[in-house]
Image: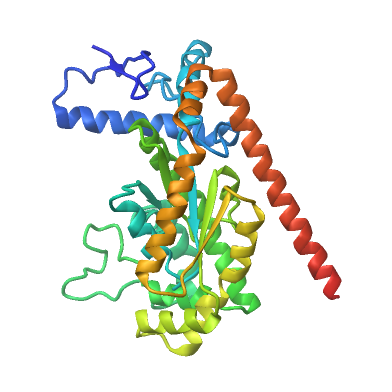
Length: 361
């Protein structure tokens, strides 16, 4: 028996050879097939057009075992694409030691219970020993960073626990990329060029999985949300910020006791000033940008977050979701319109920053 689309559109998905497998084997095969779908759509130039500002308009009903979907399969995908515009993408960002992880934890817990796609976790996954990311980092940084890998020991074999290599020594790598000098910026750009494409692909697959499970919203926890341009695909961006830089520094040094003041300052300077991120978020306008000022206790932060999530629910009434679901062409038009709006917002922000810099010269 063919599986049914998780969006309940009634389109059958012929997962070949899966029905006769055991539950565990079936789960493995379905994951493999999902990887094929997400891999194809991620690599296709139209992928970004299918990722709306408010949703991920992905043709989930494409036959999973085909690497290249046929025209008829794309036609079957349209009803499912409309359903995707009801899933809100919330882009969560901040800066080091401003409380982003706290907000992420609150969002993943009751009463919100939202799925979190954490870019930091994915960034660790894509550079595990044996991955292409790991090999690229070792090739570039290894010759000039003797302590790039964890030292061998009784518990850490020379070739790593599984023979794929020893894990990266993150503090050593951090010293190579954190800082404000031209050399550090160059190394950081190289590292980002290795890690970011792999993270985006894993993120796309995670969001697709959340969509298939029917979540009303998903949180993209991305430290470099604006810098990577991924804010253009979010219905709402949320920045967790602190008013004073001293507050950020004291929290960072209290959290990471092994960091000296110079190392802590380098880590803060390696990221865009969180006050600038907050200003950019506010520039998106009401209902599109939310700034959570985390200068007080956790309870105050939790209350502010609850109020903002309630507003998001109110801004996405059920009747509108049903209208989009019942009219796929409308959903696609709305998706394209929201994406275009976010692109224009980004262009206006960048223009204002260029004018500000020019005015100071």
